[in-house]
Length: 601
Image 1 (tube, helix red, strand yellow):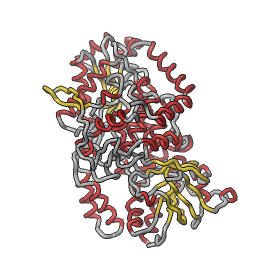
Image 2: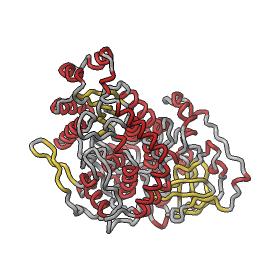
Image 3: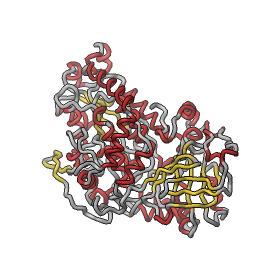
């Protein structure tokens, strides 16, 4: 199947837009690679410090003739998704030794959980933690002793931050080793119903706590299809995972075998051998287009609309929201995974998962097949499933039929013909809207607005019974410059209750919603943000706004915004408490949300 015309056109547009920046980046990476193995440039004293604690590996490290892997880990045991990484360094070291190589933990990076900080002050550090992770990766690899890097990370900002770091050190290979999702617990839709009942005052906190604990119950990634699992899909479709690695549960023999296989593969693709695969060559324009296609085909996280541009910029590639919208217009929605459906990622994986989806998209001409990956040349390698044979991983051709067409459908007979993402533009600026889980009758909403400067104000108004008619809820001063752009996911149950009561409601915000954005229409990432004097700062209670995903517009109707001065908000309290003091320089220097809201790129 020839490549879809729109996919080809978007790819060419990105290549042209990025030509100069990409050429500069690749030249810089080529010059770094030409310097040869990194350890060769260290003095004897430098090397002695680096190898002092390495015991039996000291001699091999000192010769510099065998690969040395740098492990960058986001391990902590407060995050269920990252707790399994505690065992990974030992598995990787043993695998490296079996391959005649060595491995060292180069450094750790922070990993915070949006599930813990959701609706809390700590969420205001969440987006910026991505840049801290990229910086920490730079510190870890700055010792210049590694021939390849192995990255251990899963969740929301961790993988994007690690990819930014990997691109910065793009002259060495990068392999990402996931931990996998926790086993299925309380179904996500049942958990959501309890949350809505709690928001409506129909059940108490004891029932809510019981439901939450039954849903999030063990090691591994949360099982809904939010940012963490969208990240895993992304790493596989972009060729930084081993095929089929994304959704194998922690603590299983196959999970361990995939970790060993990933470490072994990392030793084989360094500049010391004959199959050199630096990260800079894998992270090209076609890989990022493939990532966007995967995002649309699976109904993935809106957070990737920020993270993908930031990751791409680190590799000299410039993405635009229009690229996402155009790709969405031709990419079928093939998966129904909560919050877009009732299934979780374990059910998705059992139904055929990414191997099935990649095969279908390749056959439909919607993915670039000629990309370099950590496995080989061409994405067809990923239309396969890992199997255990005598304790080692082998790959077999994937079954090309879906195991459950209520979860995973062929590209020729999808759940929706498009990926469900709209690029909204108008006199309020530019925003994104994910509609894959929104009923088509709600893709266009026109209603008076209620203005809020804090999500708690929305909840308080709801409790006072103030929402009695169709309303567009505007929550502003939530952008990266104002308070770090926290997710507003804790508004979902409140707005869903109003919608279930028969009201037409929507959210308009310069903040983020969530990787688990669901059935309530939400125009998010509105730019310019209110703290920059954007048009959203000129809205007043009662103004009529129209949000139209079908037309791709977001408009204040019958309002002369140019005649108004922007509202001012007291942001003094945003700068202190829970570590926010340390991030003032981030808030002052952050880029536009449409460019990835980056500080370091």
